[in-house]
Amino acid sequence: KLNNYNMMSSSLLHRRLCHYHSALLFLLVRISILALLGWANALNVINNVVPIVYSIAGSDSGGGAGIQADLHAIHSFGCHGCTAITCVTAQNSMGVSGVYEIPSEFLRKQLDSLSEDLPPASVKIGMIYSADNAREIEMFLSKAKRPPWVVCDPVMISTSGHALISEETKAAMVQYIFPYTDVLTPNKFEAEALLGRKLTSFEDIEQGARDILNTMGVGAVLIKGGHTIDADDEIISSSFSQDYFLSRKRSDASDSSTKSLAQRRLCDGEYGVWLRSPRIHSDNTHGTGCTLSSSIASALALGRPKGDSSSVGSSSAIDDILDACCLAKAYVTAGIERGVQLGKGPGPVAHTNFPSSYRDYPSVAFNPKDNFQGAFRPMATSSPISAVNILATSPITLGKIIPIVDSAGWVKTLSSTPGITDIQLRLKGQREEDIASIIEEAQGYVSGSSRDVRLWINDYWREAILAKCFGVHLGQEDLASCVEQGGLEVLQKCNMALGISSHTYAELSVALSANPTYISLGPVFDTASKEVRFGPQGLSTVSKWRSFIAPNIPLVAIGGIGDAEIAKLVKDAGADCVAVIGAITKADDIKNTVERLNEAME
Image (cartoon, rainbow, N blue to C red; front, side, top):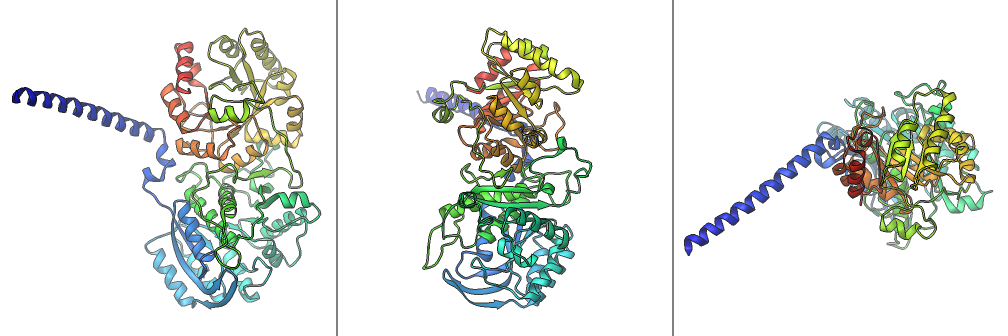
């Protein structure tokens, strides 16, 4: 009996070991696939990289602003914060009762000690307080072996409008710090102090940003909209907080003077961008300026290294300064909404986690004076959340997969394929004079199908309207052209559906502004089907995109989704639908492939 028991135990142990071995082997294979698909660049954990961010600023003994707020924000973005203190304040929620300047020699000692062991990916500069300290910071920046991103919050004027630094210090900051600054983040009062004039309208803000950029040596400027800008428009000013961003042309971008309208994006900072968030009426806003600038610095540290356009950081979706500004604005909006009063005076902005809510995420205002409320034709998805939000108003459900094809012949084939309800026609390389007839032919196949199939046209929105297609899909450059020509209003009047591509956080803000039918993200993985300048986004970015998009707007993932197994991973990450190319057009058995993809997206 004992021998039988031992044999049974040994057999059971053997089976369990085989099971664990198989599970481990499966896990190792999955990890290998993830690495091959380029996810390593999308996850800090895999790379084991924690970006270092410096805060060179003053200390707030009340804990709501200065380096205290900076460290909270830096940590929330998954970075490591280091500090070099310029001054120490005695303050509480009711005000500042004293300031002690840190001697410039000791500021130098702090910076030298940090830089020899913990070089920064980015630096946030806050209150400088003395001209000597400005010169020390300039010496530190000039000696950096690998220049970091530099975000300067020119702390000069308090929220109530009182001066915090001397004219000598302000002049030293402009002379020594601004030439190294990648983005300057003044509030309205600080921008006025730098310019020596009042800013009372949106036009004043735009001109002020141009003057700061042209005369003070900074790479970009974000004039914050926490204060009322245009007193003549109470509805807009009371409803929204709008920041104006303007930057110099990127060194790796084409010459703006030769850039055609079709090549521009609505988030290209060199043309000026208004970022819009709902205005939250709260007195608990202490430290918002410090928090915003340190959040920008942290987001930049997560993106591509400064001066290296050929590589990406831990997030391919952070490609430029405006991407970082969008994330920082979302973080501050969430913090204001959750801020509470701790003492007798105004409370500090709350510190949460990495931005994760569509309620806080900013959009791009095509016109800062326009309260655009229009929305495009809505569609539901198989998601229960989507169904609750939209099914009552729209009987149309977006398909789980959208094949992207390049000919009317493919549209004809797929129109009769079970399981396909949406097809996108992307025409590239055809003669312009042939485009309209190809689209009309393709729509004819869809209209003549015995099945309920919808045709989406990539980019050619006028021809899509004439052919009476269901919807249009626009890339960022074509969206800019469409907006410039009044096309969005025309599409809405024709009850057309609209899908918009996005690759970066700023492009997502642009897409949200149009209230589209769906928003796509790509490339999720490496792809050879289309040349794009953005690296693979990975599954973590899919999840972030889903959190930044309202539940009633479907998220479509595209790029490198070559089979049902990968589609399932993308679905689990938050995508409502996948757009596929080679998975369909190169399939030996299209019907079987469609069935498997649809099952994966259930």
